Image (tube, rainbow, N blue to C red; front, side, top):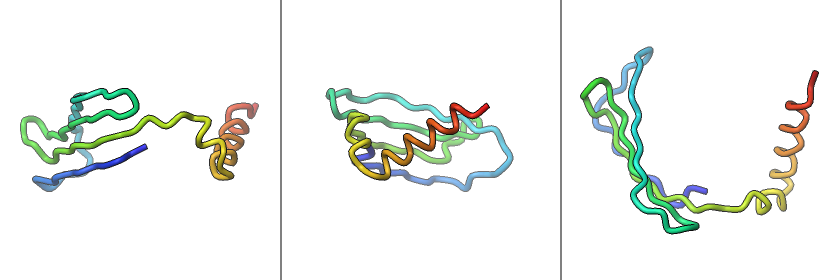
Length: 81
């Protein structure tokens, strides 16, 4: 689950081009982890991001009607002939 996400857009991003995304784990605190990332066009930095995510057990989502509906929809998709 996203706890915090900051994106800094530095340059316009052209469409229909192959871009490079790199990410690095800064800290793994067990249930919480911090990541930094960059979006580049060759050597030109287009955007940078920093975020914090929290691990939430899958069972937590299954306790909600939305989570159960998503589970059932995926199950149906995966079992189609």
